[in-house]
Length: 256
Image (cartoon, rainbow, N blue to C red):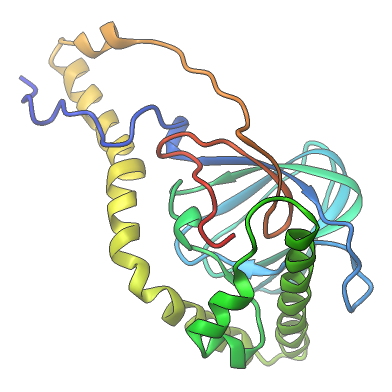
């Protein structure tokens, strides 16, 4: 028999499959200091991110212990980056991407750190001021998003130059600085993970137990859900961002 406590629903209902996050991006076409058009380089500490390319062309530049890579993107391409990988979306022409994020809720709660210069990363107040955008999608927000992108590219180019030259020290120090910045957020992240991704996985275990016991009563609750974007054209890290405000799936970015 499956206990009543084991049947309890997670605190955040109706997650997408696997409790992933979902958004759509149109890559920025702003030219950066190195002549490349694209987004703000950053990494995630505990979430893997995937790009599913739906239109246009471009690339994603990554920094990792593997070194520097420039991965072409075209319709049908899928690229994903594990925690700690610095990634920068590059615009080739009308690049459009559907983004799938592991551990939905955590990126929105701060699991992303920009590659700002070291002196900004060392000061949480300066980092927060540089990372936070004004509300809305107007010209002031656009200007702030562009300044943020340029500052992230400044730090990124320093990391990339060292890594290409065979010196991984600055890249590793950036990872450590990013970890220090988010450390105080871990208790909140843990609760979001328990209520969303972990609860979703545990519910599968409950369902398997019910099937093994020959008592698939949970199938009586079968249903369908639908939604639509609730914010269009927001200024995300990589580009203009369409978001879905589903409980436990994609929440408004607190850093923006």
